[in-house]
Length: 293
Image 1 (cartoon, rainbow, N blue to C red):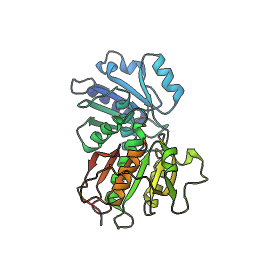
Image 2: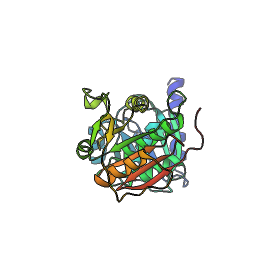
Image 3: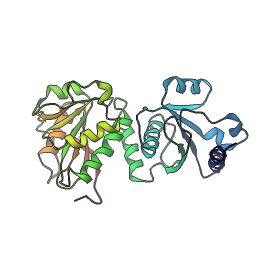
Image 4: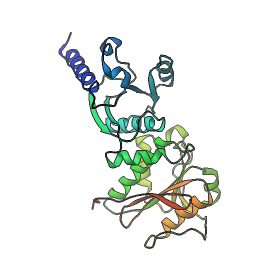
């Protein structure tokens, strides 16, 4: 056995031993390769094991063997993003709950496991955001919502080339949103295949950052496909009330969510704060601790 293989085996054994302790509630393995049965034999972590795979057929095969398994998109995420995506999926399927301690094992797609992380669900801002995302309703994809919340926070913090910017991202009920809005400028996402403009792809989230300098809103389908950027939201609802100090961008988001079944994320150009609107009301408000200048 080579030194590299020996190190990999020792790494896995150490991780499984740690996962077997009472301090760990779940062992989340994010890989398209199962842990060898011999390595799990007699270990208490066997009942804590949850697989996150990128292949639908593999997920179904694991479920048929009475294993716990979820399927996540196969985009080229960083290890940290892959862990977050898997945790959001597990939360949405009721496999984890707030307060659980999760030991996560992952690595590059198609490679051996080389990274271990521990997460306490609800113990950090990112985890609380993920929990909020899965409570919005079954019509919304929790992975999409969480990815967009994280993106909105990045836009609020980083701006564009050192300058603060604000924007609106609508999610869901896209037909109604398109009918009650109009294009202000050329739509940079028009003519691109749906598989190449999904917000679960890190490259598309980076593109949204760049296009956030455009006036108007992004219109995003429930499954994460970006339909348009630079849309003027013309919906108006006189019954909508927003807190004092919030401007036209927040009023537009409140109105569009009151008159359609979409939700909307607003990044404040003034403060970088991110607010999530549903049915005309703010349901989540996140403030930046620092902004890049």
